[in-house]
Image (tube, rainbow, N blue to C red; front, side, top):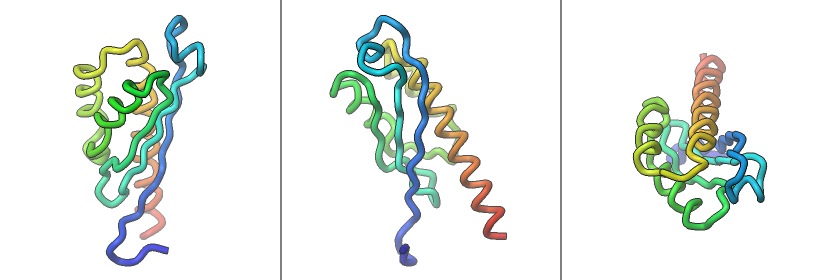
Length: 115
């Protein structure tokens, strides 16, 4: 149960195929990206992904935490394009777009329910 001071946190996930020939493809067939979002503010408070190395997982998480999904996904896509030069970039980008779409749908549904 939420009290008035707590914001609702919701977990969103997105998955995308990884390129053949990279380590992550040997371990996973898809990249899983999971974020916890404060739906009142749109801020990503936690993030994790299924990249093969701890360094890559931690780095992607740090890029995502603090981003405001209510501002769209273009800003974080720009950051990702600049700051992540790994082979799974396209898969992460796709998973992030899926998450943003889920977030928008959730917000729209929540607004309809509260009317």
